[in-house]
Length: 214
Ligand SMILES: [Zn+2]
Image (cartoon, rainbow, N blue to C red):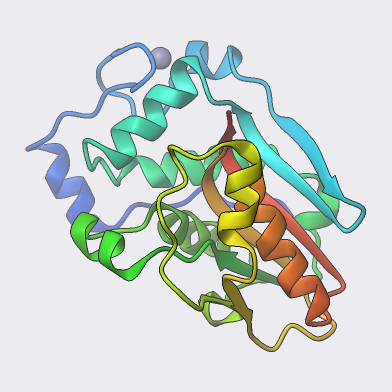
C-alpha cells in the first residue's frame, strides 16, 4: 500500500492568505515543509535500540530538519506537521507500510507542558501518520505517564535513563505491533523506556518514529 499525500483541511488553506508559507530550511517562499533542495540534504536514519525496537528518523537533528522542528515547536507553525509526517512516512521501511495493523502511539507529555504550549507535536505527527496509512490505528491510550517527568534537558545520559524509569503505564498491548512517535530523539532514554514498558506488557514489536535524531 502506498501512503497517500495528506490533504490539509480547508481552514488551513484559508490561513495561507494570512501566513505565507515558506521552506523552514532555507526560507524559499511558497512552499509547505522542506523544499526539494533542503530535502536532498537530509538522509533518513535507522537506529537499533533493542532487538525488538528500531528507531526510524527522518534524519539528523541539524540543518534544515532542525530548523523545521524548531519552526513547528517554537513558532507554532503546526501546519508543518503535515509536511513532516509525509516526510518521515517516506523514510519508513516497507514492513511498516504493509497491511498489518499498527498501533500508533504518541509519546506522552507532561500535562502542564502540553497545556502551556496548546499542542503536542508527537500527537499531531501520530494522527497524521494514521491518516497516511490505512492500517494504522491512533492509540494514545496505549501508553500513559504515571507521573510528571522533570525536564530531561539539563541531565546527563545516565540521569536521563534514570529519570524516565518506570514512568509509563501500558495499555492493552498484548500481541500488538506498536510504533511510538516522538519529535526528536536525543539519548533514546524515553523511547527505550516506552518500548520496554510496552514489550513487557506483551507487545510483539515496538518501533520508534522520530522526525530527527540528535
Ligand atoms: Zn529549503
